[in-house]
Length: 488
Image (cartoon, rainbow, N blue to C red; front, side, top):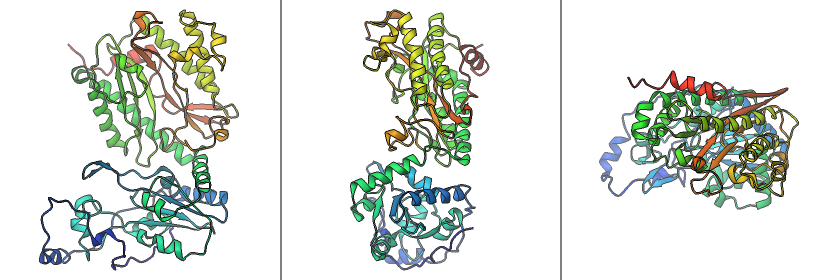
């Protein structure tokens, strides 16, 4: 199924870090005898790396990308490790565009789509046993960081020609002069290697985003799996409510992370676990507060699947498992706004249709509460928008491999564009009453409510990919009652 990988050679490339393994000052010395002994007596074994289901989809994506820039060379790096603190790195996560067009998730790789439309993946494979890298290097060494796949294994899995990444610079220099576009920001080394034209590179980033706007069948399946795992993570959290009450927001964050790691790659973004007044901070990720009976807790969480597609779901729950009359009233206002937004999603409507529908409901509700300084219709005018004091954010964003997907697409293709079948977006209106807002009744201060679901645009409307998680006030009470541990 794959092209032939370039044979691996044990010779040390001139800029291979194996020549100077990454070590630390506290590492023991390695005498020549120890080094020589470590390079002998090892058997060979292959990794079990089957053909990846993304391979045929990625090949079609590269064809579309090459067609968009016919005659140009396109360079898309995966990126490398990022320092967390001192000599420890974050877990590696490949750049989204690189993974989308190649399927590769190994670090330091670079996808090159040549001017003739052919593609080569330059990758860092596992080191041979003829260097010290495999037992000394903390970043790439097999005995430190795990066994990396060989070039042949990557090639067979992804169906693409693979060469050693240390050949990249020489191969690019040896090729016939051609216009080269680079996806900037993922790899400082590649950025330095290929200084270029900012406008050319910006076009590549734009098109790479726009080609991801419409999801293919495989992607929709990945997003559905991420939503299903996310539902289980919410259920896990409620089933541990006794510990939630004891340890607070941190417990929900940790519980959900366990599900994300068990069924996926990671969390798609830092979980927002916002009890009480913390819910009025839109991106509350400190998650250090208490979960207090009588209050609400806003949970905005999403599992990132093994192939990097993420869910993005929000529910606001009554900590006691039942709503007070006022909590229910406010919740049902936000739910009505969200349902209006979801109902507005269909092919051919503006991207803003869901936002406009949801804001209409919220503005009229705020007017009914006596909070607006002008009538609702005047507040909804784009030159006014005073209602946004209590709604704050947009209702939708695209969703995919990034939680805020396709962010470099042109406004005409995204924010000012129209929806098309296969797009996936969130619908997530909210009401937020800050604790120091003197324009609202005291009983509302410090209350935040958001409801969010992941919506697939279908041929005749929409499908809620996260709809298995209950939304109505009554459903949430029943769902919590069936899962919260008994306190008898």
